[in-house]
Length: 138
Image (tube, rainbow, N blue to C red):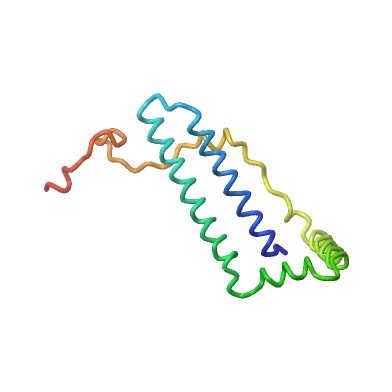
């Protein structure tokens, strides 16, 4: 059901939400080393997700199969209103067949920032304050 233009809009919206989460995370000052570490890992994970969405967007904008161009010409052609109402009818039919597919769960940004990312450090490294080279030395 998702059209190329709808996918493009959704990717842009997801990227904006993640950017807002990064800003909100940086607005909260991390006081301890552990908080700074978790904050940097959360931001890094969000940036990785933004990069992934940007790569997908680039592929959509490249339009190698011509699908985006066809969709834009359909929307802006001489029969604009008939094309619009055909798309509305298709959307209604789709949602009648799949009633629960249009709902997304709202994620509270404060809850997303409370998650502690998985950080892999040995016990001797004190969450990255020191570097444990003992295994490499032996």
